Length: 116
Image (cartoon, rainbow, N blue to C red):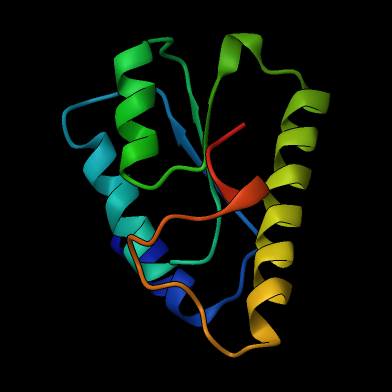
């Protein structure tokens, strides 16, 4: 995780795919850590575990969407990433003209709220 955090500080990424085979107690904490380092970078959490409470917790901790590997086709992942990246750039363009971005924890408005 430390190596990933260093990379996120120095290299620009359109999105993060956080692949988790076995969801543990600290999985959501790791999502929070990624979000702190890469605040405006969307996170797609890809996991082998289909467990609704964990999905909700991952979203609360900063994941932008939660996808179960069993149900994910290549096209579905591509579509998810396209939506996440489009939202990111729409968000940046929307607020870059004013130079004022919402503070952390502020509610997003319109199509920017929620997940896929």
